[in-house]
Amino acid sequence: MIASLNGRIIMKDENSVVIECAGVGYKCFITKNTYDALGGVGDSAFLYTCLIVREDAFDLYGFSKNGELDVFRLITSVNGVGAKIGLAILSVFDYEKVLLLIASGDAKSLTAASGVGLKLAQRIVLELKDKVGSVAADDMFDTLNAVGNANTNTSAREAIEALVSLGYTQSEASLAVGKFDSSLPADDLIRGALKSLARGI
Image 1 (cartoon, rainbow, N blue to C red):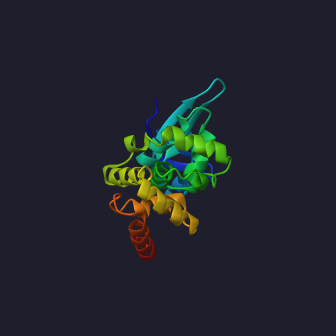
Image 2: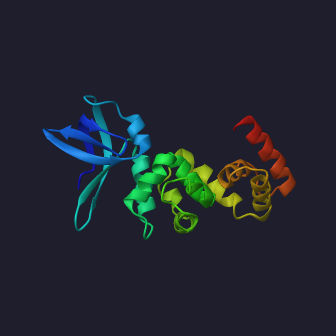
Image 3: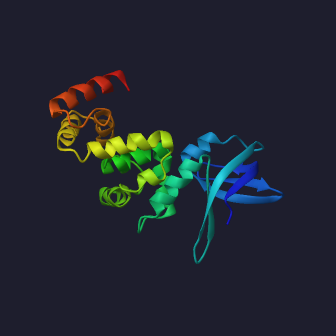
């Protein structure tokens, strides 16, 4: 298995890059985030990679961050979700945002990715909600845990619904409410979350 590539960029477009390693050019399909992170033709590059073998092709997918690779594997573990959808989601959102959207149950936001309808987004959230912690970095694990708890507590859920009705996304509302003690009354959670959102933290 090809786990990574370290070489020189000899071709690059928004969907793929060819990296020459020891005289061999390896074509990798990439996300927009990885495209933005890479240099230009002639520059050196390092990518974490995932090889997907099908009956008619051996496709290599490259990522500038190991976390992005982990989330790609997580997304494509959902039955019926292929690499194309995984790349589409990770081209619209960075991998940490994808984890937050899934943890907060924000299927609607995932539909911003090309080819992702609401039913598919809901299935992704349903199947992966309990798995996001397994790929989260230590500094993000507590955040995801707080978001998950906020979505299961009655007062917190009421506060999240109120914030969503004010125009915030499910993930924004969940993250803001998750910063407070979920045993507080819904009104207190709403006030605290609104202050947090107003400060942009």
